[in-house]
Amino acid sequence: MSTSENTAGAAAGEIVPDTKDWTWVLERRCPDCGLDTPGVVREDVAGMIRANAAGWLAVLAGEEDGLRRRPEAGVWSELEYACHVRDVFRLFDVRLGLMLDLDDPVFPNWDQDGTAVAERYGEQQPKVVAAELAEAAEALAAAFERVAGEQWQRTGNRSDGARFTVESFARYLIHDPVHHLYDVTGERV
Image (tube, rainbow, N blue to C red):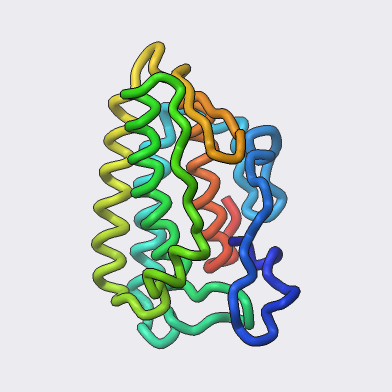
């Protein structure tokens, strides 16, 4: 969910679902966050996940009321973004496991906006979210560190037809938490 994507229909404060196909980041640098996803070295992704998690832990150490405050109608708060990133780390760990264990799996669909509402992201406790985000990041980073040789070319498919190798999946994954850290800090990579 990019702040630039959430303007129309958000007058009442609801989040406008992000329906943009972000797979384009596999082809070119992101003009918002600055990440050159095509240039990411696959073996560096584990370290990038850990570094990103450290950035989120710094954000979540902020004043609780500020973490819960949405910067404008229709844009997630810092806490809501952090919950999303935690869940992205968890989801991608599951999907990576599917790619490594099954031949050409199709990933179950995930409604990120529905999850944010159902899980009440804005009401979660920042200290708990920080611990869970750190744990999820470490699990995913460790999983990517175990990938070797031909495993990087194993494939998996999103329900919308997007197809990934483990290598492209790693690059695609890292853009999401990096971009969202930019959304809340304004700091480009």
